[in-house]
Each structure stands twice: as C-alpha cells, then as structure tokens.
Image (cartoon, rainbow, N blue to C red; front, side, top):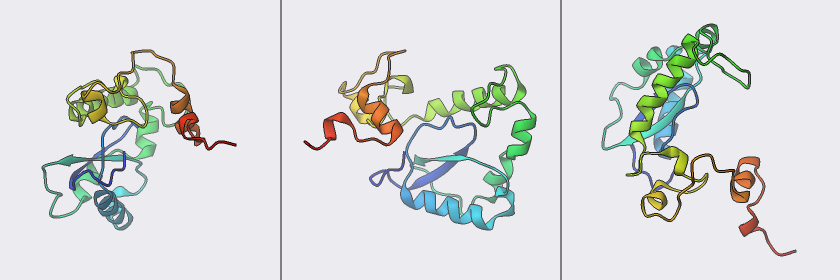
Length: 159
C-alpha cells in the first residue's frame, strides 16, 4: 500500500487487481502525472507498486503504459473487471493468473505468502512472527472494520 517510509524506486504497473506491495507517494505522483499526459494510458486501469533499488525510467512511463491492455480488450478477453463471475479458464482470467504469479515474487517481505498477512499489518511484522494469519481464516473484527471504513474495535473511543 501507499507508504511514506518506503523508498522511491521503480514503479511497476500491473493489471487485474493482483498487485501486493508498497509504493512511495512520489512514485504514485510521477505515474499519475504521466498517465494524465500520456495517450498510451487512455482507457486503461492499473495498479502500481514500487520496486526499491531500481531507478524510475528516465523517459517516463509511456512504454509501460503501451504494454498494458485497455479495459475494453480485457473485458473482451473474459477478464472479470467487476463483481461478475468469469470462467477461470478464459483468456483474460488466465492472463490475470499469470500476472499474479509473477507479482507474488516481488512481495516485500521474507515470508512470500500474502495470504498470511492480516489486512493493515506489515510484511516486517509477518517476518518477525508478530502476525501469522492461517490460510482460510475468517476475517478478524479489525480487518472487517478496515475494509468497511469503520474504526477498528481496538481503536474505538470510550463512549
């Protein structure tokens, strides 16, 4: 997620709502400005994470935007762009699965299993054993609160 402490680096663009990682605010701003000014970004939705240790492209993000598929093409290929149910073997959903497999290798922590990270916690906490969500576990009250925009039970003020 958006992180003030995460260093600037190379923004990595992806599609399919499968990116898991961190992004520096300056990197988000650079991508947004380029997207607003770049024809290659029109009609395309994307996610961005920052890969630390790599420089941003010197010539901007036009080449990266050009590699992304338009939302129209994604929909035509059978990718689920909303809350519908597309067959998992459609070309679009197979493309999302491939992108997910690649992006999971870029997780910021030593523990390379995003399913063990509780929403709102960090990979550093997972690496140190302070968080370890069990596979298939129901969401915690705090996760539900974070996901719905409510205040977490442990942070509510006394009435």
